[in-house]
Length: 360
Image 1 (tube, helix red, strand yellow):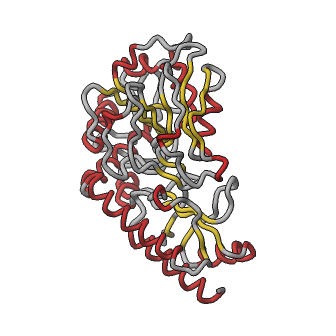
Image 2 (tube, one colour; image 1 turned 120 degrees about the vertical axis):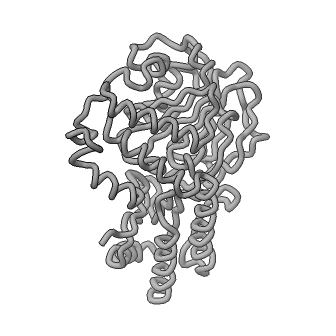
Image 3 (spheres, helix red, strand yellow; image 1 turned 45 degrees about the horizontal axis):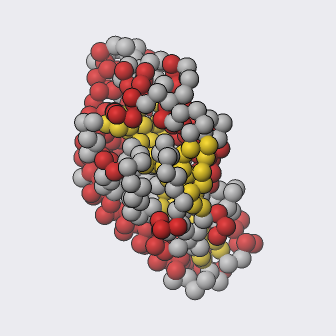
């Protein structure tokens, strides 16, 4: 029996997607082989790749003047490629820090550009987002970078910040397709697929085409977004199985009602879990500013750390797995991405209530 999997990534995948992949594992359609065994240059995989892009464009309402790339290396590699492609050597770039992954993005960018930390909530433990009025943006920045949702700290931008005419670059690894977004408000949207869009091993980059015309910095062809766009993400051999799985996941989301439907589901799931935490009389606590609490990643702490081990052991026995918090923060964390059914969140809330009754 499958458990309710609250892993932050690689994360739970939709069961219908897993079952379809299982059924097609030995032979994709009538090709005589699995899709993972077929050439990425062949007609069969070209069809898979083109359909995945078309479906993702439809799911996210991606305008025609944006390129969609499917690449390797995860979001962390993209964090290094973004300054290489969109900033001149030594040019200033602005970063707003709201958690661990924003700091990682800065670390990847620093060898290539002059990083200006325009705002940071680190002094407050990354429990909120600095008010826009306090951001110290550079007048000549190549771009402004934010992390749309912080997977570890559970902090999420609920509005698109106004940064004027400077391109806004956003890491959407853990909140892509969780609700409608206006892609046209961003210069670049990127992220790993392994939370809401499919398995680990493939990432997405959605980039306004005019930004691809920037000279950027000297870089190898394999590090050049223009080259990947020109070759339709097949400059080198792509992770074909992961791309295929991403396509199945996106198609499943469309069939379920698209981002509008998932926005409704995600709001209900998050409200249910936060209500259990807030209504526990201090037995559980979430320390994030309620105005920017994540709908995807819910970190929480027990009032007594000695209860952490029994909580995890009893949760696992109850069919609830991967609830241990990230080592950078501790405590617990429930990741409730699109593929997590409402029944799974209800099961967790019921377990938390019963655990509190027995240990409170």
